[in-house]
Image (cartoon, rainbow, N blue to C red; front, side, top):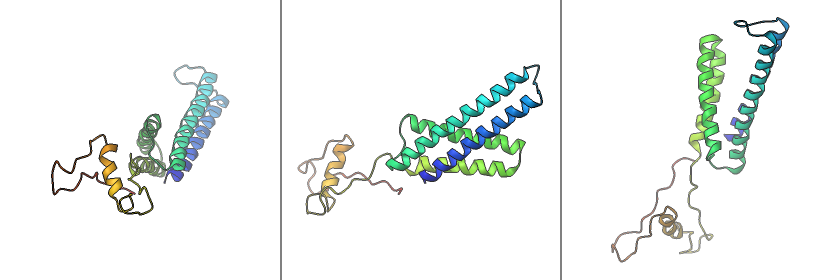
Length: 177
């Protein structure tokens, strides 16, 4: 999933940068002006905006690539960056629906859905793994992982003499793949 999102974000960044560069060339060659703004300033700012926007999506693609390589959820700044990319795609999709063809809207919504899916499918914590290839009492039967889970979550391990007849506390496993 993260590999697909990486490719989509790179393609989106290239397309947006090329489109803004093209608009800058048109503004320069036609000597266009908006509300008296210098045509050269419009051309340069459109090109610079395209480069910045393309680099933004390239950075988002790098975060997605790191998620794919590490096979774990993005954290901190990377998660915020991917959330902001999803919001940008949603806003661009709304503008595209109002101003252009519905095919552009659908394309942007597919990118939005892939970003949301990437953010939602990776678990924050991996499931406990067997410690020793199946030796009884060493984790292969689940007892070592079940005993270590409360301590890993910051909860003190229950003592067997506290509540006789009850199994030790075990943390539930994540349900997403």
